[in-house]
Length: 397
Ligand code: NDP
Ligand code: PMR
Image (cartoon, rainbow, N blue to C red; front, side, top):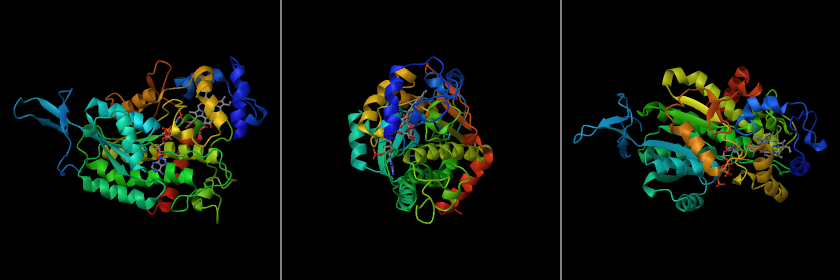
């Protein structure tokens, strides 16, 4: 991984107009994929309670005149009002999750449940971001423990809030780890947290989403360009590849099986990218299984390269120093945390982003567009297998 960070250095000083990529970063080459093709796809953003539960949320003026659920009439004015939406955001204590929570809370139209593993950190983050305190609640959730996920769901249900939108955002990235580490249930930690924790959470909370009377119910799972091998970023080694899922099927425990989904040797950076492929496949499988029946919008996104977040906390210092300027000035894929938060907040609440099964990206002008996923990240059969194996691992089948 240090090699990859060092590989940023020469690249930062020569900017080929059209680069062809072939081998690996180890020989610093970036050939085999056309940058101009890339501009057309993922690169676009850079170079390219249940209804019967008592609703505990306030109401704000509605903007449309369409009679829809979640809308009430004020007895005094006769004006239509839409109650506040309730959105759960995992990993809202920093980076993209915090910026999204802030963007939504500031509108006054959303109550944000910040589902975080470190309560104090989340409270400090919300305060220093200046989030209006009546518009958020922090609830404990450690995605690296299936018990904690189940406990969170119980606590959330007891809180009496409706669930209108769920955002699966939290993630860990261990690019420099030599050995795998594991969740409470013994799964390699990146896939265990980013995919399996969220898989159980979203499967359980699907019931709550179904019962929401809000006009647009959504389940959003954050994806990434680096899990998509149809992009330049996705071709930086190690590349995502789930193989035949043999490691996942055997439990990713590093004892009886490999800690990697494809059964190969442990590589923390690859484990993260594989977990993002699982996130994008899960979103599509949800769409195929439940969109028609429930009307829920299922979506994923690549918010842009937010090179300053805590995601890179375990990377070597040289990488952390060079990565933001590299993304700002070379790839032009950089986005600020604030901008990324606005993007994810759009996927949560924008009335024009209700299409289900979509992987959203943004172009240079920050306009959203439906992006193409890689072959693997849109493989229907693989999505079904990941779903089936995952439900066994988290105890749902
Ligand atoms: P951050 O590290 O800033 O945020 C990650 C969040 O996840 C933190 O709040 C962290 O909590 C939380 N988290 C980690 N482990 C757990 C756990 N076991 N249980 C509960 N919460 C946990 O990174 P980003 O904001 O960059 O990442 C957010 C999402 O954006 C991720 O899904 C990532 O894959 C995606 N993404 C990021 C990109 C980028 O360029 N940064 C690009 C594309 C996608 P704590 O604060 O306690 O550590
Ligand atoms: Mg990448 C061409 C554009 C581009 C974009 C948009 C990203 C995004 N990256 C690009 C290109 C390159 N990166 C190139 C050419 C290189 C080789 C010098 C390169 C390297 C690189 C490294 C070592 N990039 C990285 C790393 C990481 O450790 C990051 C990672 O893979 O995290 C999983 C990363 C990223 N590059 C991105 C984005 C968005 C990331 C990180 C976050 C993520 O995908 O979630």
